[in-house]
Image (cartoon, rainbow, N blue to C red; front, side, top):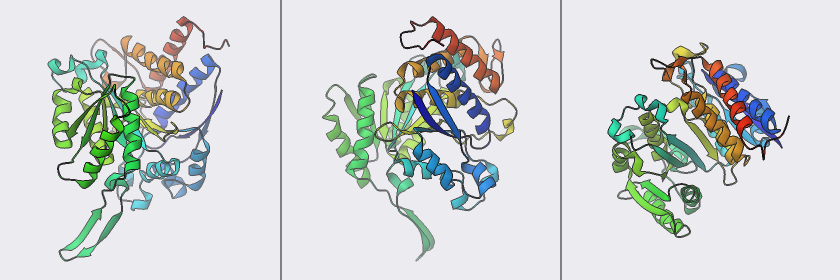
Length: 373
């Protein structure tokens, strides 16, 4: 099969980890007989510097015409003081709008070989962490009407928290569908004790749950949930929540694993097309840029999500995830996850090791779906 991928390498460590993601795609291509046409285009801060616009029309057109969009890290301190329409994050917002993505999927998992990096007590993490956060991307104050002006008390600003039942239902269906293939539990998080938008959210999630009788539904207020996910992360399976709450909770959950840089992210439309980025899209550590120290696993994991959700290549997605686990099991570590007794390697070598593991696992499988080269 042939697939078209628009690649925005982005800013900071983005180009470094993007190179390794492309390398993994080529390894899958070699082992399974697919053709991934990778079209590198300018976007985010890099495009601001080169073309004066974080999302040039040519780039947006390429993203729309592709089967999926892959994005490295974006932004950095050099763009902190540019006008809003020049901010690197505008690239993401424009692509979301153009592709009509509705939900963000953030798998939060704890690698058992890296438990030492979690800030949580052993008594908590020994139970494991395996949570899928389904965050709405179409509503909330992030997408709502914005106003700046001067009023009775001086300068003022407002952002409209808006939801309708169609928006809520799309992410709710995504969450219940995912839970039915996992542990059959959906935790819906809102602020329905004070927000009208959350009252609607809760009502529509309840209605949607009737179509999934095997999946248990629990409701949580966001402030309580922010504590519960730290105290008892093993009690959560699939979380579905609003744009703003999901933006915050997904990052909180990522950090309790201690290895947020290894986690992926997928932003999907109702048919599975979308954009794929590392969980930590806005990487804060600028000291390692260009030094072959960045951990590429987050974006490589997102390649697996792209194969699974956009291309329906389940076996290929599985083998990438298994290869990442195998590389870690063999003791290979980038600087951020290095500890005494393990093997310190750089960005490029981590990509090479994962490719070697793909070859190893592909050679040892049944070969039913594998194309002989």
